[in-house]
Length: 62
Image (cartoon, rainbow, N blue to C red; front, side, top):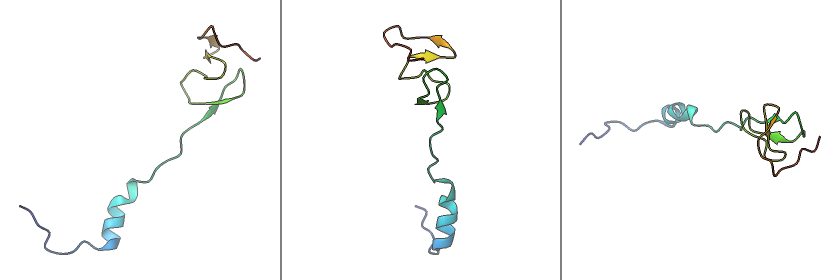
């Protein structure tokens, strides 16, 4: 079983973890209703995607 010979310093440990930070979620604005939505996803508020009505039970507010 592999066992480290020396203790890993805090600096080396933290440099290894430098890529583990969380990034904020990208949010775009729906052109029809103005609500925030995920890019390349249907709008949850009005049910449109790429200028087309996808869900018929949600009404367009524009």
